[in-house]
Image 1 (tube, helix red, strand yellow):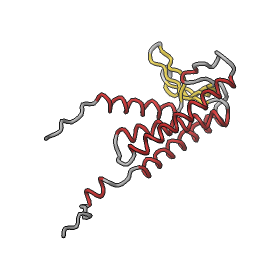
Image 2 (cartoon, helix red, strand yellow):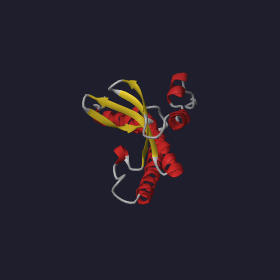
Image 3 (cartoon, helix red, strand yellow):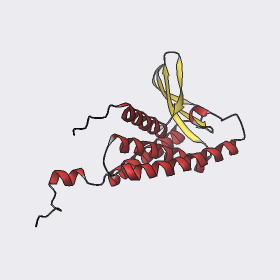
Image 4 (spheres, helix red, strand yellow):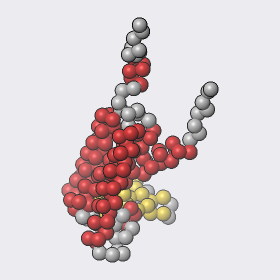
Length: 177
């Protein structure tokens, strides 16, 4: 009678549930987002900035009542926009949580990407619920193009989305039969 429950240390490591580690990463990004926004709130007056790299990068203090890149900020009632964005964010968080629950068993590009998106969505959702706006503070200018101000949560969402795109377009390894 053979013992089929025996696994090597390598197999045990490979099958260890990565979700606790992904949760820690989510909390770390949320803390980084909150701490940087709090620092900006307490050290930079609204609509002011600190130049870090002249002509390229500055830390600003912008209140974004719209969506990404301040979309819809001026188009309708700020309360309507806020409520729509909160609703959309809650749906996105629930969907990403579901995807992460399934994909997070293993540490992979997809599970890390979903973790980044989840953390970013939660960070901006917190701002929308608590303040009715999102605090943006990273301002980048490349030649004559001024990138709209953004924050750590936005950076996490964009990085996660780029990782997902790379995963989608990356060639799948050929299977041997």
